[in-house]
Image 1 (cartoon, rainbow, N blue to C red):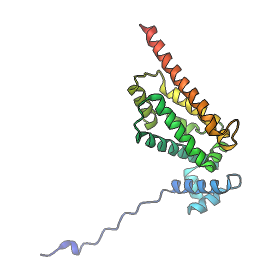
Image 2 (cartoon, one colour):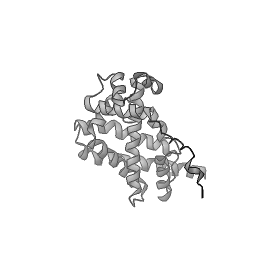
Image 3 (cartoon, one colour):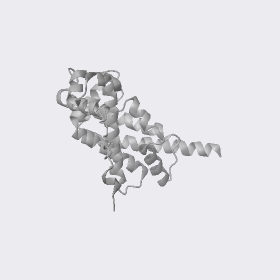
Image 4 (cartoon, one colour):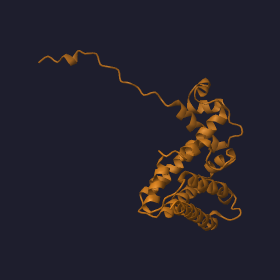
Length: 218
């Protein structure tokens, strides 16, 4: 039987275009970790990424814009690792879940001090800049969903869980940099019990305020 397909011209395979913005971010991250960021030019970043210098400006306004995007991306990655690790546990208590995630983040940052130095040097509001904060307060994000699910399982109703999460992250990021990088005022392992006790109190207070609010409505 004649097979017409034998004489049909083969269709060219579709090639996937490389993600040039991703290449630029990866290249910048590698250079920042190798040398810091004081003397790295846009041309060096483009050369490391294997793209033309003009391509850089198709994705980023300038080096600061790239840096902000990069730090947001890496911070998100840290959070996603922590959430994935949490999902692999059987921790049910709301405050224990929060402490687990914070502890995981601290340990991962402590193990990646070059990345932490980059973040610490370039952000004035802690680990998480505006882009990351927008992600964290999005009700669709896995972080917020996990927070709400944990609270519900523990019988806790928080009036504004996004604000609570933001405050906990800001407290952690603003106080842990010096403990990890300079062991000031304490090495991070000695500081953790103070931090965790404060976080538990914040959760308790947020829960108490919600309970009092409901009682006032009766």
